[in-house]
Length: 437
Image (cartoon, rainbow, N blue to C red; front, side, top):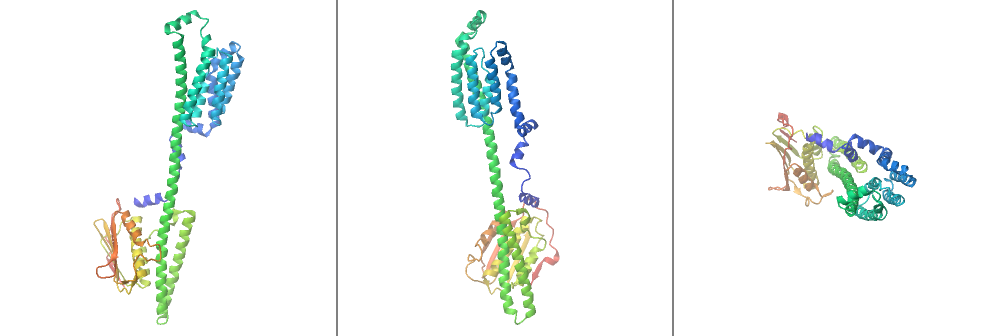
């Protein structure tokens, strides 16, 4: 399970945040988003349909100016998404002019509400609410001066009904209040839509940044992995070259073997360096991440033996869990510890690697009895070896100690609890109990 999660984490998601967000909306909204021209035409057609009664009434009384102005309102609404603020001003002015020229034109506020909504989806809510108050005030003035004096002036029965309802002033206040309320509602709906869009945009931006940071972190992790591999290879090459210089006269055959191992190690280090450069350039983390293959721990130990370490390896208990990250952690801790032995230990006659597996925990113990040439912080590399091993152990809730041994030499002791939901372990084969050189 952890192996699958590790592989999934190293892959680039197949769907972007925008695609995932779009999948949450219905098919009709997706269709309109992909065809904005049809949406604009639909809005204009809906406005003209809602204004059909006003168009017919204006034509019957011969107020062709009102008919033309309503047509201009529809044309302006077609451009509302491109020029929201300009269209809002144009719709408001056209509506006011139509009311002035034809007081019987009661004011087609549907176009104004559409324009207010559209502008509110593009501009800050505070700005739009201030504009709405100003627009409502001008509408009230136009209604009071041009419309209200002629309202029901020729109908005594309707005037009597208005009087019973509460009087002309009450009707005026109700009309003004409803107009202002509908204007505010249109802006409020637009502001809510704008906030949702800004929220989605922020989430998309956050997702993009998180993906970039994850990719950068993965590249850095791979770079550190490659640094460990290259540093190990260079340490082995230095030890091999020193050994070859010593034995070349006394045992040419042995020297040839050492030189062949030196060449093989150098080629491997060159390939690893090419990988790390490729990772840092291209960011292809999925295929270049170094993973220990089956038997790679034994191969790595054998390389240290060839380099001259008097190495003894002992493993007791079941096998390590089939978890790639956990096995890589064990591999790197052992590799870093032995690389430090090559770098700093002098006159070591015994180097031991012990892996004890019991009760869901792996205990690693790497010891040597050599004298230390300086402190372990004086490294050829980045000086982060012990810290890196401790971080690897902490990844599984474990701990690591690295320091001088009680009887001299150096000890690295790591305790690594098995990862949760790890596959079951199997007993170690009998022939892997102890290996000595």
